[in-house]
Length: 343
View (tube, rainbow, N blue to C red):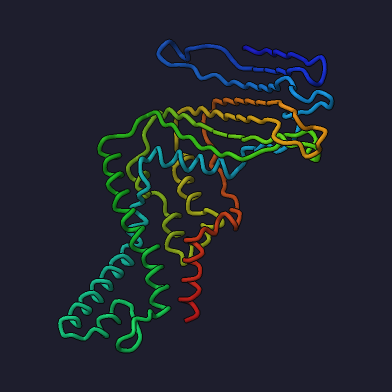
């Protein structure tokens, strides 16, 4: 066991501050020299520089709130990254089989309309040819039919683009299965945000940036089966994917990703090492009250939390902020869906 603390306490509020504390277990090898031991460890460090310039009124760049925390949504993203790294692809054979008829119908319809358009063009009937391609209106007009526009957009977003992506992921799946996957998996997820750690926000600002990163290292005792990797043991994902408008629900509550994680994570056998890194840096940015003008000061913080686990518990999904969920593309898709429903 190792632990300790270093604390340089300031004599006055203008002096430098330094605090570092740590705790963890010792040992390099586990079960003989052939296996490196993973040790839990935690470290907390806070440092603030001398206050330069204005030294009449003390300031602080490390006292205010605003630091981020690692929440359930972040853990969910990390587990999704873990599942993707373990499988080596995003291809789900079971879902593709269940939705195969939709792709066949889409391709058949596209080829049919395209063929008819070519036939009309050959006869010199440009109006009929344009109508087959989704352009309506009278002769010499090129005004688009609004229902055709929304339909083509939805077909592109949820038909052609996913199909092209599935073809690419299928190739990746073949490569992962044929060449074998590594027994050591590493997944990393992070986030960042601007912060202000001023002790007196009404008098001055101490702005900076906070970064949170979590890494998970997994050493598997056995590889997941091919059937599980391809989603053949995941009937819940198939049922969810073929449910009408399930992709809209996933915008706000990622049930599809949760079901995929649930089909893989509980079956993993091995050891797991998670490390959460926190890093923030601030400085005296500007004086709101003129009395603080001329101040120069800096603050820093570092935290490390390392845990050794024997298994992972599947993180449940959380609701996504509607502002974050509704991207421009999704808004366009939502408008198209509404238009298709009412026209």
